[in-house]
Length: 501
Ligand code: NDP
Image 1 (cartoon, rainbow, N blue to C red):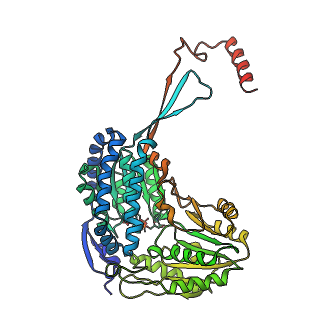
Image 2 (cartoon, protein in one colour):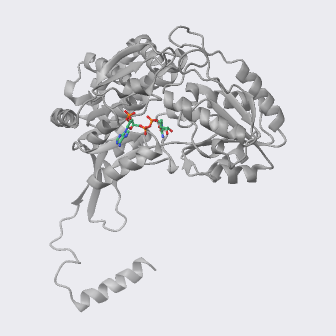
Image 3 (cartoon, rainbow, N blue to C red):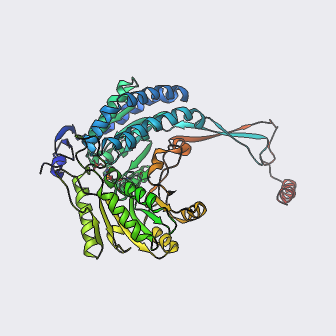
């Protein structure tokens, strides 16, 4: 069939990259050894010494040159992202390239302020002063998945560089060429070559990166691999951010605008072929709007234009990225239908390569795999619920908690429900897009991850927070120093009673 097969990427010392829509070979990269990964980290460490010593403002100016390359060479980047990743050019531009141009611009402007030393007013020790300052961690290892092969590793890398770190990226073996293209643009921007590196390889190369002496690890990927990464980081006491899987629920209230909701859900479930960690993966629709909503969703889904994204510019949806993921999607659909769910749209592979039809399944139940396990493909399972209480309970009945969505015409109710849902981000009347708002925190609760990326605190996490405490009034001695005495004890007791009266 010519599509990407697992054997192709499992050749011994080379990794072959293919266009998932056609099977066309795009190139191959080395499967780098642990020793090579270690050398890359050592070179990054060396380059980081002078980079970390630069004022934040100067780092911002230089990273700005990389941002300029991304903007200037956007068409070339979109072309490769569509070819290697299978997404449409519209998505390559908006969800990957433009997202990075915006994230870089945002943090370039804000980093000097975010990373400036901060005074801590002391409530009791008035004779002393305190402040925190932010020191680069050293070398940040970034282990990335294949679904956003440009915006995930490059966004993390931009933030890590601005924070003064060296960076070594290990992209997924499914999409290595895009990460190497990012490196090419970085080099063209004239930044220190060893400061930002890409090591290509399979899972063991990711494990080798954690073992190569990095100072911080940002891992984005499945919960299963995330647990291994957490254990490896724990063993070495390396701090890490884990951005893991999701199973985003969408609650549709009785008062929701059904037209808007249907459009939002169709986009939220099928954008990037459903291979988004915050894709709409289960819909809980109030019985009052359920039937109308399903009809509208099915009609909109039927109008989506699908094809090979590298050949056509006006497609809504392209190909899935990885052959194994298509098999998982097929398994989820089959088990749902076997258990009594109803196929309303799609359900099949399409054309050549890894194109899979956008699929809508209704009459789902909470005990079905399709409602419980991550799908990570173009499938929207829908379940009818009695009321909003039932919907919230079912939304929270999951080990995962990355994102969730609430649709209602009542803004107050929307926020009230949002606050009750166990997820890192809950959006009211919209889906997906907060990854593109770099000022907001991104990350999950429960088994969807640990830590947050983006936002002021995400940037600060890429630094050591160091505290300096200094004297404002130079006294001969402090009250609590030796020698202790009964008098001191009595005075302290009185003082305590007065302070905490
Ligand atoms: P994987 O967990 O399979 O892989 C992620 C990365 O880890 C890849 O680069 C992989 O290499 C590497 N890796 C594999 N084994 C190890 C190991 N033992 N030690 C270190 N690194 C290792 O995830 P996928 O690439 O399949 O990505 C899909 C998953 O990512 C989904 O669950 C999705 O929800 C999640 N995700 C989460 C996001 C978030 O923000 N929370 C965003 C995007 C995706 P290789 O691929 O070469 O084997």
